[in-house]
Amino acid sequence: MKRVGKLALAAGAVAGGVALKRALEPEPRYEVWERRPFRDFEKKVLIVGGGFGGYTAAKELCRLTERREDVGVMVVSRENYFTFWPMLAGIISSGIESRNVAQPIRRALIRHGASFRRAELEAVDPQQQTVRASAATIPYDHLVLALGASPAYFGIPGVEEHAISIRGISAGEEIRNRVIERYEETTLARGEVPDSKLTFVVIGGGATGVETAAELHTLVRKTLAPDYPNIDPRRVRIVLVDANPEVLKEIDPSLRKLARKKLAQLDVEVRNNVRAREITAEKVVLNDGTEILSENVIWTAGSRASESLANLPFDHDERRGLATDACLRVRGYTNVWGIGDCAANTSSDGSPVPPNAQAAVQMGRAVARNVLAALDGREPEPFTYRSAGQLVEIGSEYAVNDVMGLKFSGLLASLFWRATYLYKLESPQSRLRIGLDWFLDLFTDPAVTQIRR
Ligand SMILES: Cc1cc2nc3c(=O)[nH]c(=O)nc-3n(C[C@H](O)[C@H](O)[C@H](O)COP(=O)(O)OP(=O)(O)OC[C@H]3O[C@@H](n4cnc5c(N)ncnc54)[C@H](O)[C@@H]3O)c2cc1C
View (tube, protein in one colour):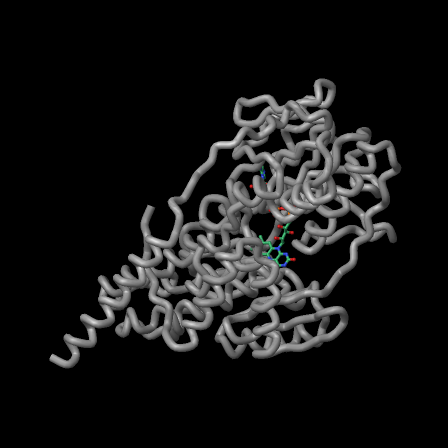
């Protein structure tokens, strides 16, 4: 009786709170206000690609032209969100929800003062100064191309057909669903399945491959273990195949060594100095003649500049992207710019700019200043890349970080990784939700569902 009374009191308090909130809150008003159409601006800056580079460029241009009436900014992008790539691997273990990795951009851009169209770039006509996207024709005075990267398969037979490649947010879900699918098959067959069903091969020992292998470990050993008590998680084999002598070749050797040790602790089998020669539905054939029997292959071994460049009339190298000058202008044009992973930019010291998020963000800011300089008849400035270091998370409680020359690893590094990327997320809601999920994970294991498409 006492308990019923308490419950009734709690329910009453909640109902009262909701009623009070409703009474005090004004009716939401959704005003339709007349926005000035992009084509009516005297100076039109069109940005194609709403990822790290394009979104930053738009935001910065809006900030710099806040008090001006003559400059209009529009972003055209394939999706109405930008993928926060550094957190993508977290989707695999369910540590991070997909919707939080997809950072909404439409409302954010409108609030900054830009226009947005969700459309696929089809063609550019530099003479007419127009872009065709999803059958619409959009004029520009300055065009910024920020189309990102596409996976590279190096002509290896079977990769596209049989491997999951990290093309977008859906890849994180696909990998997780694949593991669940194999677990369901194993349960139905009372464990009588070939080892190839429970062997997961990650190809590529860069940061994405290492993070993917570690997240697979967390999924299998932690997240799914309570759901499948009849499957011994040690039966699952995770193999990381890397063409280099060591994984994470881009980071400091001391951190590489720690990463290798951590992967060994996680029972990730690392195979260095080998390349995949062929992938079939049942196995991976390596160039040293060995074979790994596996029906689950994940491809993280290469990327190249966006495939969309092939349809454009601009000089480019298939792998590194648009040919640009020191000020980020596309070769042969004074009003077309290339930034981020789709452009072969060099820093002012002549070194190539690496394809990473911090470089794309820095180029986004630089191109905004340069476009404005060009619009106002000033000289644009050469771009200088400044590396702030590198952070690689290996599982949920370990990371190896190099921050401005300071190298550290372990739990503290993992907390630093989390704090940094939470701060860098664009959406405050995602920041809050991810932070809350991480906090709850200290007390409970995330539950996993398989939403089949
Ligand atoms: C799994 C993964 C993890 C990563 N982790 C890190 C990390 O931890 N740290 C780090 O610094 N970097 C990381 N990177 C690299 C980093 O994310 C990229 O270097 C960065 O996103 C490049 O920015 P961008 O603007 O050039 O491209 P993107 O951010 O990819 O944006 C490209 C945009 O162009 C749009 N687009 C493409 N083609 C078209 C078209 N035809 N029409 C319309 N729109 C189009 C896309 O929808 C997208 O919005 C990671 C990359 C991956 C794949």
